[in-house]
Image (cartoon, rainbow, N blue to C red; front, side, top):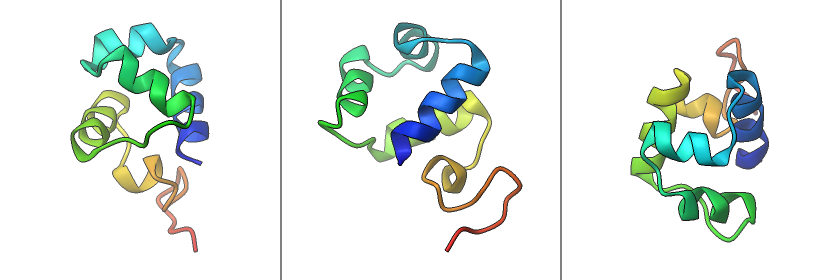
Length: 72
């Protein structure tokens, strides 16, 4: 799930939801919604996360693994 990938990326970077919000310029209420499964990220948020974590959108959305291999 998206949130599992996000949690792993946050853990690797050593940040919490508030820090992610500040550093990525994504509202904390939006991030909280993802964690509570009330909402999914929109295009702009995905772009911000991709840039912030330096990963591909395919990795973030679990379409590929950390090595760039496509997941079926």
